[in-house]
Length: 392
Image (cartoon, rainbow, N blue to C red):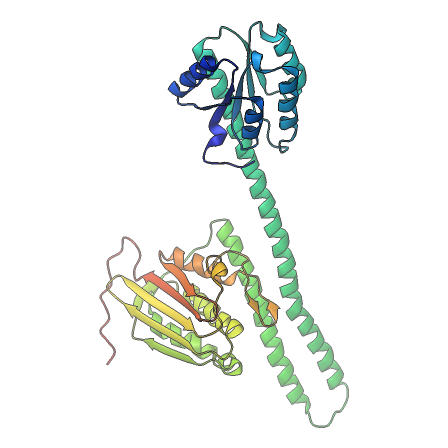
């Protein structure tokens, strides 16, 4: 049962006498309550399954067969659902229909019986209460679904994080054991210092990987509790781009990626560390998912914004994945299978939006990837910065 355009706030009416049903609908709609007349119990049962909010019944509509049909339909509802029923009888609970429906449905606690003639405001009030009850049921269902999804994401994250953390830890353990064995005997061709140098280089690489994984998890925690902050300072984004690319020179050479930067001075007031984090993620993704592909970084500015374009000529992203690429725990697939925590681009988006900017991706399978960042050059409420003159 789902929310289908507000149907959960509409009343189903079943009354054998057509004019009674029309009158009831008129009364409800005059009080801004949506209503739908059903011509049979079969039609009403079908609508119950579509997610309507409450049922208004006349006792004449409830012969034993109809009562059984309704009872079976209500028993088939999800555990969270208990559609309210308002029954109009000639003699209240003492009527035959009143006793039948009371004995059949009252255990659920969501049946109200009114003796006719019933005052208009009494009927309207009873159905307003019923619809409020129904609304709360949908709210509870939403909370349950959100909780289930949060639990699923938590369990998935723990599983992924455990796997990603285990890989560098296992590598460090193996390297330590291997180095200890190598240093305990004299093997020709490798001096102890050579062995130690290789060990420390590998160790440093794995420690850096562990540190990034931990920092990503901490960032997600900060985002969740609303403590993800940016600390602004004035700097040239073009200089930072070149510095970050230079830091990746060895990894880029190993992966066969070349980088072309077309960017003049782009002055602004941003969080230097956080924008370095964005660039690190974009370059790391290009190395991981588009090895050997050329990378182009282009930037321009006007009086208010800097626009940064980061492109690679790799395999691209499938159309069905493009809309999800910035979601938390969304992971891409490489030739070595699924990799990473699926947090990098999610954190990138949070960083850019914390600066008041936007980030989007343009891609299709086999056509490379283009990330476009647009960042305000200054904080909202602060004076615009003068445009820097073109570099000579």
